[in-house]
Image (cartoon, rainbow, N blue to C red):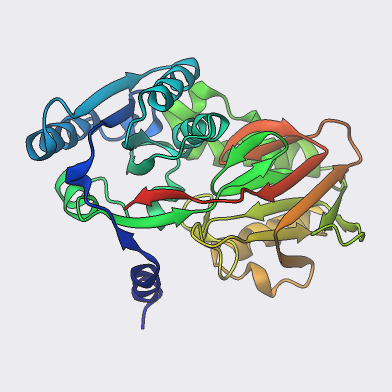
Amino acid sequence: MGILVIERERIKVLRERVNVEKFKKIIIVYNSKAGCHQFFGDMQQRIGEVTASLRCILGVRIVKEVSLTTFEQIQVVGRQICEEKVDWVVVAGGDGTLRALVETFVENNYWPYVSVFPAGTVNLVAKELLQNADPQRWLRRTLKGIITPIWLGKANDRIFLTVAGIGVDSLVVHGVTEKEKKYLSKFAYVRQGSELVRKELLMRNWQYKFQVMIDNDGKWRDASSVIVAKSRYYAGRFSLVNGGSLSAPTLHVCMFTGSKRADFLRYAALLATDLLSLDKTVEIIPAKSVKIRSNVDNFVAELDGDSLVSSPLDINLLERPLNFIS
C-alpha cells in the first residue's frame, strides 16, 4: 500500500466532522502578495471562485473576504477575527501567513476552525492536509467538514506549525529577502543555500555550535545544526523524519553533528532522497519540549520559514490543538 493511501486511512480514523452550514461568520483571508501569485497568474481568479462558491452555498452575508498586503494587516485582521468571533477562517496564502494569523488567535485565546487554500511560497500545512489549489476540488473536500486537530509548537514567545530550525537552515531563511521570496519563490532558498556554503564552508569548517536538552532530562547534546520538526514535510516535498505529523502532539528533534562541508553536502543529498535517518551523525529523538543554546549570542532561528526568534530557545507544545477543516 502506498504512503499516500496509508496517510489517508490514518487521517480518516482521526477526524470528526462539523456542519459548515451552521456557521454564522466565515472569513477568507487572502494574501495577495504570497509567492504562488508569481507563477500562477490566475491565483486571484481561483480565490474569487472559492469566495463566490462559498457565498452561493452558505450565504453572501455570512462569507466575507479580506485581502492583505502587509504583515501588519495580518495582525489587525487576526484581532478582528477574535473580536467578532468568526466561526471559520479560510487562509488563502502560505505557511507564513497562516502562522501569523494562528499566532494572533493564540495570543487572544480564540480558537476558530481554520482551513488553508495553498497560495504561498511554501505550503507545507496544505500539502500534509492534502489540500489542492484547484477551487472545485478544494471545495468538494473542505465542505465535507472533516476536522483535523493540529498541535501547535511554541519557540520562546512565538508560535509555529511545521518546523523550528537553528543553524544552517535558519541562516538560509534569514538571508532570503521578501523581494526574493516574491519573485524567485522556492528558488530563493536554493540560491541562498549555495551562497551560504560558499561563504561559511568553502575554506573552513562550520564554526557554529549548539547544545540541546530534551524533555528537561539534564543532558546537553552537541550539534552543529538543529531542526525541530512537527510536520511530515520539510522544505517542500522532503520527509525529514518518520512519523512526523501535524496532528500528533510530538516534536521530532533532529541533531546534525557533522561540521565539515562534506557533511552538509551529504545531509542535503540524503534529505533529497528521504534517507536522512540512515546517517549515523544525525540523531533524531521524539520530544515534548526542547532547549537549545548556542556558542553565539542571539543566533537567529526560523519558524515555518521566517526568522522570528533567536537563541537561547525554549520550545514546547501548546496544551490544546487548533481544529482545521480539511
